[in-house]
Length: 365
Image (cartoon, rainbow, N blue to C red; front, top):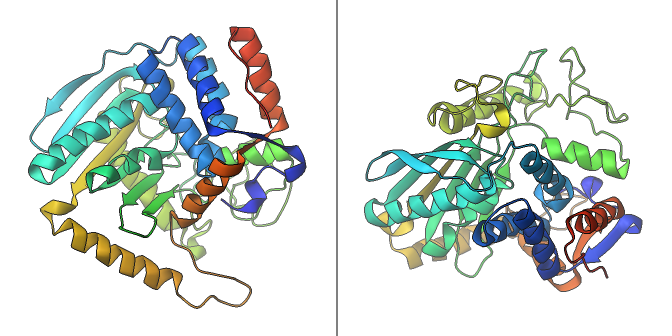
């Protein structure tokens, strides 16, 4: 994540991973989740923070999830079920489950299927927000598999040439294991910026960068300015001349796989009329490397390829070349050692929330 979106040093309070996980799981438990589900949801949030994906960590999302549980928009005790299944695929009705709870379980099903037939894919409807999609894709890697995960969502992004939001930001995440090199983990929004990054700008007071949002009439904002009150995301590429049709197309494809294929929500259309918070939709898939070629040989080739990438001579003004997943891997090592930096405003929220819920407060460095 660009430094522009990080918490300013003067506003940082460091917390350790274990303590943040404990308090987060306790909050989920008070919301009515089982101990297993509370720990699973907490792990998804804290993993995002430890990897530097603060947009989908506790700072932005935990307070949102708490309110959704309190308002009845997420079911803390879902009785999800498989409604359609074959050897390689399945469709899940999540019964209003939190996406951070149902998606890992769906990936486990995909992994089991892939272990038998080489590829497993599961589509999900009637769920909630799923957090950082890389978390679900990465769940396949310990099984020597490539993971893929998509989530749909409501209409918050304008199409190319459009004046009104019609598609979701629709992140796509791939996780590919290597041997000695850190894995390749690509988690990208189909929009120019994740919606939650705009919330980070509002919290830190930073200005809006060009090409991220549109005016109310759909005109791309191409100059630095204060963050507007209304969030109308642009597709990645920002304008047609810069390739916004590619981000727009990726969003549509993602909503087909996660929304239409699952009989879930797509754009602003909710076929089941159960409300957008109770009809999120996701798609996860696992690809068994062993079904395609020898695993050790594949990982060795990945090491060679990733090394080849990082050894690219850097352009002027840059120290090195990265690949997707490498900065997050390195950031995780730093944060495991030094702590996770949370904004002071987030710490205040934790203090008031733990006091309200009568649970042990968060320890601060």
